[in-house]
Length: 484
Image (tube, rainbow, N blue to C red; front, side, top):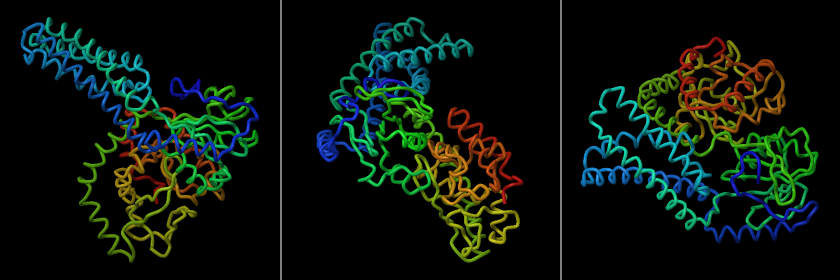
């Protein structure tokens, strides 16, 4: 596959135009191949993470060995303080820089040259940063220039050797079979290579329908753990597939012969047929790991710190009205998968709205006395910290919506088909739309359009720093005139 989002070296052979294929035979071959691989989709993702961590450990050991070699050459003493101090200063910086520059992305597992260049550049930047800080803080006298020079040169060699050792280990462990490719046949039959998994929309109940959230949930489950999906469908269904794939958080391609209004982001190939790339996962493995680490680093202390408040609110809810403390509601999450969101119950039990079909309005008689306060202060959302710990949500991202949510008299996805695109990332406790003041009732279609524009803007330009700034900005809008 050439173009945007592909893994290097990907090709899909023998997909001739108008060809026929026995789907059962292809699926049988795919199952047999999976048995030979010995891993399923979840195991493949886990294996890739393990291999990336292995490469990280190899790099750290390479830097340590390089600094020890510097000590041996300079002092004939492997554990002299000069080399070890350099290692202790450079190593943490290197790990951070290397992760940020995708030195441990999935692509470097199969492309050793790219991995080496990113590792060496990361080490070079980390070294320059250490020497700059040493000079600025006037501690360079404590660092041996000769030892540092020898250690840096030796580390360049050991990093290259370590990366090649890691490459051969990955090759021996996986045979470079590191991706899970899926072909979905929607009313079109094309030959598929034996290493490509196949689904049929009729047989597997996956006929595309943007007005059916439960079909989207089935599709999301089918795409979980998939690295690349190629759709073979009639021209009239290519547009709907492009909408579904853009919100699926996978690298998606549509088998096509002509350009149309899909909004392609690249062109690839499947054998002698052309494909249009219409979707690309917004965050790669390294960025997802960084976002998840940040979520846990903030959420775990927050749960401990807020536990007295959570307990007091739970008691107040029980004293105020009959019913459970928590309100659980199905919401649309990452990849259009459904999950149960946790909230403090703010309504009378017999008037709760599981589908979210009726927005809460000012003076709504369904809301309890305590509920009115915790909604106005956003305290009712705090149990979603447990959704973050479970991995259903992130601290920052598009807010999750209930299936029955409406803007005016129309369901959200009826107002704008791009609505499903916002689910390419995990939903968040807060987001760019919220800090811009787009909260509360969606009385008009414009209320949704404003939020959707902000969500898609966040999706297109994610950075960890942006998450941090949105979290701090949220403090200023915790109490909002539209929150009732």
